[in-house]
Length: 317
Ligand SMILES: Nc1ncnc2c1ncn2[C@@H]1O[C@H](COP(=O)(O)OP(=O)(O)OP(=O)(O)O)[C@@H](O)[C@H]1O
Ligand SMILES: [Mg+2]
Image 1 (cartoon, protein in one colour):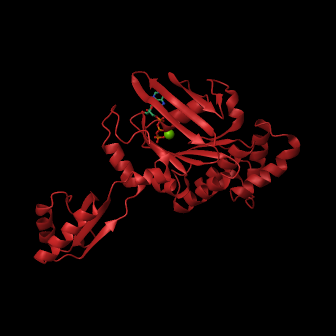
Image 2 (image 1 turned 90 degrees about the vertical axis):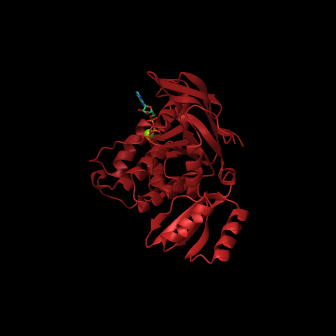
């Protein structure tokens, strides 16, 4: 499998602020790749550099083996882009707008109509006759995806396409991106980890200007060493007794009527010991359970364990 995108040693500073400190990752052809990072992590900066809109200080980017250059990079003929805040002509209908975009993108005149209908169908806007002005955010994002795919790019880059959306809107976008995978490779940025879990084949976590973790979803999940386990009780006394004996339990959270103790990344043996302690002393608990570790937990542990500017054991999967 060849790479649709390869980013190697990308560095970028704004003034004295080093935003990207040697970012490397690659996106295999026909995959959906999640580019994860908190606000200000450098996602947009990375994407704009891939599009030749920003000039890196160091590093090499290739799109299908062809080097990206700053300015009007030729590689953009292979790339579709949905920016983080897309702008539309509100007074137009979807078809008017896409006709304009198709013209600008150089879609041959004879192919435009068919391509536009195909894209509108794919993003679920084929029956929409109204002007863009009345569109919800989700509808605008879907139109943005249709626009980005008009010229049949081999790589689709979407900057936080789901961030401003409610769960229904997010699902529609994720469905559209997944549908797009049949014809293109998708790179999208997000801080919503459940979106990544839902549709991505691979992902990378950008933190403090570095990729702290990247790999297939299976590889990322395999990084979770141990699950959390939770013990709940209605009284505080039970919780305090347990915590005193097992300091690995975190401060009790109150969830509804219950006090819940959490032990992060416990082993089966840890859990067994807790249960036998509870049984031996007849401590009144309401429940004890494993909490399946999510990408969210992994993200938190990776970003917590990464003091600024240092390598971590988890980098370079
Ligand atoms: N043109 C610029 N001039 C100066 N600083 C900039 C510029 N563009 C971005 N930055 C800074 O670079 C850092 C990364 O910004 P970037 O927009 O790439 O982050 P992001 O991951 O896309 O964040 P968000 O989730 O908020 O969109 C931020 O600290 C930002 O303030
Ligand atoms: Mg951004």
